[in-house]
Image (cartoon, rainbow over all chains, first blue to last red):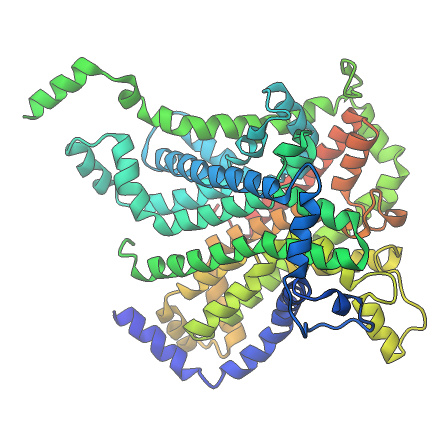
Length: 290
Length: 306
């Protein structure tokens, strides 16, 4: 309580000093927000405004035309937009839930269990935080082929599940939980699975929220599987479809459609982040464990 | 009661309970080894072979590496300098930008800080998807492109510039786009680190003669958030090399015009998936991995504990 009070006093004292801070933030804010606004405005532009010269930034008569065209254009083909969306939703939900479990379970073991090789695993994990999958796309392709995931829907899910950053973040949080907490649960007869689900997971909620966001972004935005591992069109994801749409470039009308698709693509990201972000902040503020 | 418990435990010896730590870490360990460690080992192994993806690889020892550094003039003259230039500006540049933004935000009160942090974070999660939609239109080469139409109207140029096909402008645009999307999870980590610095440290520093906010940042904030600084550095490295496909995405071709925007990642794809010279592509991958590893070691040296 006293700590909070002090921070507040500090902030109040420098209140006037905040104006230059806003001014310094302004260029980066503009750079961040303008392209996003461009997508939003363009997605709702009627065809006439898309053709306007000189190009206009702001939409005067917003319509749903681009979204309708986006869905209609794909309805005429064998592979409707809804199919790609469905694939993306199923694989992303799977990646988020399985990935959260896998990361928390290993973070718990790496943090609270003593066994040979533990430090080596954690060291390797930390080194791999800087792993960039695209750097080794060829061996990854060969491995996916060897384990029989080539041209399978699971190629969208399984290679995405082990994410070293999530293990690192969660371990940082589990480290802060006192060993006595787990010892007393063990004495009460709880096994590791019960400890993981009933004690660890509720206590590392904020790190879990962050993990969920990271896994969601990884999976939802990923084109690796659709580009390299999967050749059957009906197993590919929305990110892939969206990308092929903007690459094929259907002239000015295509600009509206691909903006609409981009909006569909990144809105779930933004919404999820905004929801989770408030949870992360409130968990941080009220977290009693230090 | 406890005697009964131990007795029961001994009698059942359910392996799932007894070896629970192995069961719990196994999924991660298997996936981690198969999809992260094994590809790296594979890349190293393949780099010593000649492999066209159909016939059995034949061992050529260091030929691929010798070829990279002595015969591949495109690699030495374009790809490597491009990669170094891009990595040096986007890596440390994006990192400093992320810290600066986090630090500025920490000076604001809670509500505006949260709103602005979310706003700044948004580009990092939309990056790959929006590249082609937004930036390609903004820098479109005909007169309807945003930048061209503005410059034409202002009379600064007479004919539209083909920004993304031009060897002089492609790289600066790639760097701009990469910096645009560089405020990711590392930025959030540094922000929360800064917010949790004990305010008493600032008071103490003031008594010790720290005069202004910038000195405060250098002498108090940065040393106090070393763990977050290290995490942020790691994420900056990932962001840098993950976004390395930008040149191809923006210009729409691999190789990029006159190789102006081609980085090692694109060169790997060029040889691996277009020319099917898998062994050579693997050697290029290894060179890239060494660069990434070197960068991460540098980060550990600067902010690590030991």
